Length: 272
Image: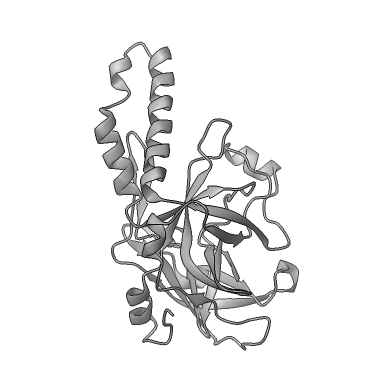
């Protein structure tokens, strides 16, 4: 695992001696460009941040198709949310620092059953809250010293689309009840569902099982057990609805793109 400190606080996974996989929005600077590599530091080698080793980044590889926009009805829409960080120096691999296995079966997870359990991990905020104000962020420390993890269940994409569409419809109904011009809010349910489906087109949806991913977990891995004691990464965390009182408790992970990763790492990193 890797902790990213720079433009944003994020999580990543070690996928090669010189490569870290994370989310595109963690390193995106706007206009399709990434932040300067020298502005980012990666910590690896320990689940405890105070014992982790800081390493400089030589290059940031952001997907050319990366797109992040605000939809007037469903909020943030991020697609192709994946980035690779090439480290300035190769890692000294050991029993406690080893590249994670990347699964070729990522896309198949979009139609799996809800009983499929997965593991999530990251250095995200341990005090979940929907308040994104600067004051709240300053007064509430959020980076845990130790790597956090938990279990969640995969939710088939169609069910995830239905769940989020329903939530948006309910939110629109609440706004209409207090708005002098209710026609300004809401839209045809079919069009709303189409937008939500488009938002989740390259995602794996997971539903919380007493586990909440938060700010700082972005870019962290979604892990599926491939054999007893063995885990393979099938996605990287993009985000989800703010986990407020009435919000749906699901999150989205961008599917692993094996071909893109192999090309960007000169075939050093291969899915299995």
